[in-house]
Image (cartoon, rainbow, N blue to C red):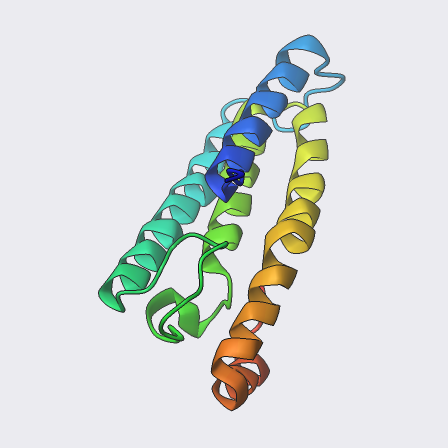
Length: 148
């Protein structure tokens, strides 16, 4: 059985790449100190969104793993404003880290990470949810944005 790489692993790799880029090739400081500490806000917001999303999925007794079939269409909690709040939270974490680091090169990682999440996970998940929940999914999809 082939093990799939889960989204938190992509996040961890993205953070490592951001750190390597910052320390090896910072190019330019775009967020000076102490303004870089504003990065704590999106970082903590991203963590909070992920915790709320995880809690909502567990409360509904459905899977958190994107490769497993959902048993329930979760539309409450943070799922009211984003169909994929965990990926949104991950991007906010990366945004916060980029601001905290303050240099230009870590910002390169954020759109690459978001695109990877879209292609590798979100599109697949949405097809699975459409197949499983049909009309309920379509109504939810019309009402709630994909990212935010």
